[in-house]
Length: 141
Image (tube, rainbow, N blue to C red):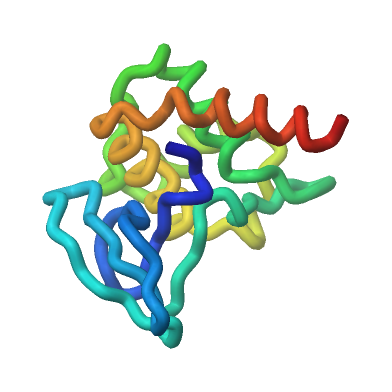
């Protein structure tokens, strides 16, 4: 499964996997408890593959940021919790992505990235980061 099938839904905790699409939206399953819900097209949905993090020079795709976290943590759960202090979160993120734009990347964004990484790790979906890159490079050729 690629990041194209993983969603963040505004107002709902965690991440969701698309099960099937419907005429008016989609049926999704929570990565936290596997419960299925129906989301309408009016819901504020973000597909993980389309999210990027601001840096001082460019926008870095979330896939690349998650890969850097995976490298730092050797594929394990993060050494920091998304519930840690603002300062601790910023220090951790600076180690992962030193050039991130501190004015446009808020502590709440850092919390989401860490929480999403841990959810993907727990559900053994981190391997899709490499698979996504392979399919992207094949499309470019």
